[in-house]
Image 1 (tube, rainbow, N blue to C red):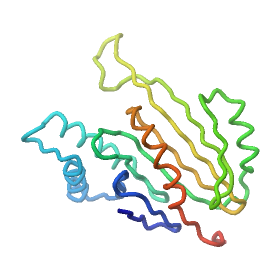
Image 2 (tube, rainbow, N blue to C red):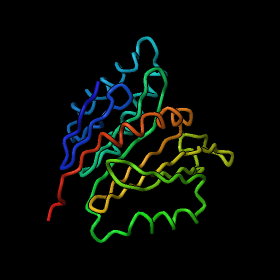
Image 3 (spheres, rainbow, N blue to C red):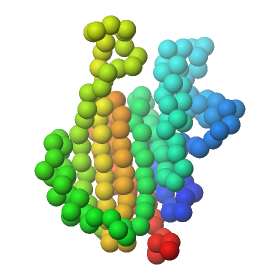
Length: 198
C-alpha cells in the first residue's frame, strides 16, 4: 500500500515500510499516534510492557523530530524494531553549489562510504554513509557509561532546478540493510513542482 504526504512537493511512500510522523502540538493527538504505532507492532503494555515501552519511547522521539517544511518518516519495516528516522527536504537549486562541487568535497572527507547516484527523475548526486559514536544518555551514571553507534546516511540529488536532500539516522544497524532496498522507490516517490516558486 502506498501513502502520500502533503507538501509543496509531493511524496509517495510504501506504508508497509514507513510511517509518516505527524506535526502536532495536541498531546491527545500525539498519544493517539503513539498508540497506532504500538498497534502496528502488535504490542500492548499488558502483554509485553518492556517492548511496548521501547516502541512508545521511540515514537515520542520521532514526534519530537518532526519539523515544518519537510517530510519525516519513521522507517519501521514489519517484524523488526527500528529507530531509523528519514528526513526529506526539497528546495530550489538556485544559489546552491552544483552536485559535482558538493560531491568533490564529500569524496575527500572521512566518510565511510560515498556512492555516486544517477537517477532518471531527479538528476545526479550521491549517497554518503558514515557513523559516529556518542555517549548513551540512557547509560549508567558512571565513568563507564555506555556508548551508541549512530549510523548516518545522506542522499543529495540535483537536477539543475531542484535539490533533494534525504537524511537518515538511527542506531538499529541491521535495519539499514533493509532501508537500502526501499531507497530507490522512496526517491522515485518524490514529485517536485515543474518550476520553483519565485
